[in-house]
Length: 166
Image (cartoon, rainbow, N blue to C red; front, side, top):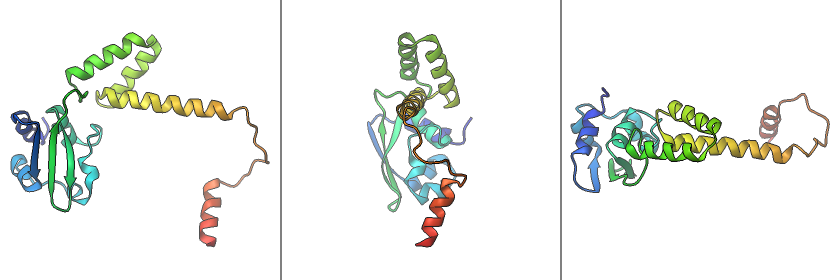
């Protein structure tokens, strides 16, 4: 059981498609203060399920954070209709569809990525696409030989030296 379960239950019980709340109202639902990072910037309110248990609470309830006003301490939650949320039926359906169209090796890799992402199939697919793009980019540059001699100096050190010289 997560300490953010009261927020999940609260959101699940709402009948609207949008729900504006103040941070104080959220704290009243939770029964404890939001962490400092929730007021430090909008990143705490991201909808990435791998971020923290607070995100999982509203994503599992079928909502996503939208219109975050950190300075005004307000946020609007909107229903995540038609999206694949962590652990939902849409996520299971997405995974089945992908596995039907992929080789068994690719399907197994996607399943492994989804497990690492806490069951988030969208994050798993994004990771697989990102890694495929990196591999393709490497293959594009393989035919081009390095034009100069290899340097024993780390490129990061060269960048720092250049920066410090300015």
